[in-house]
Length: 142
Image 1 (cartoon, rainbow, N blue to C red):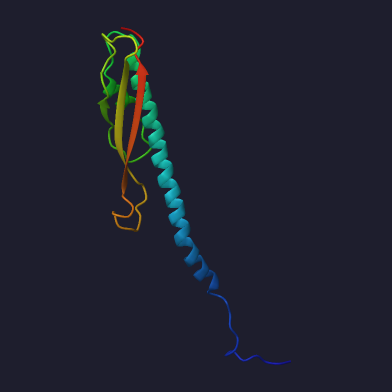
Image 2 (cartoon, rainbow, N blue to C red):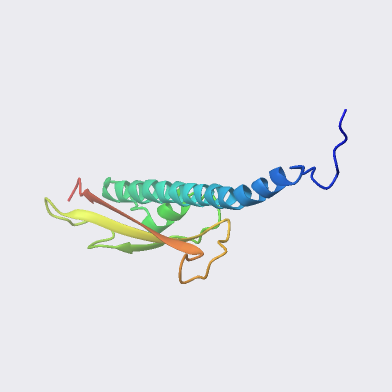
């Protein structure tokens, strides 16, 4: 039987730790990006639905006419880190006194913060994104 010298005996005990350290950083960046995109996308869908609901409420003949900004505020349910929507109107705020073919359009913008901060400067990847949604419906009454 031959005895081995300890000088020439190389083990790979730390190799898995080094491989894990090299893989975990890009993996966390990808997972963080997926989560940030998912939150921004969910907030965009919520804003789209809120603006559509408000525009639809504005063209339906109800008395008294609803406050469309309040409808957007009530219907918008952000997932995380979002400001209140700023609503602007295209032409008119109600369909009252409209003629055939006129429409009511409104636009809302909201600022959404990312959940996970990126380890890069603000000029490369901003920490927030502005979401915008528009809806336009034809007036159903005059």
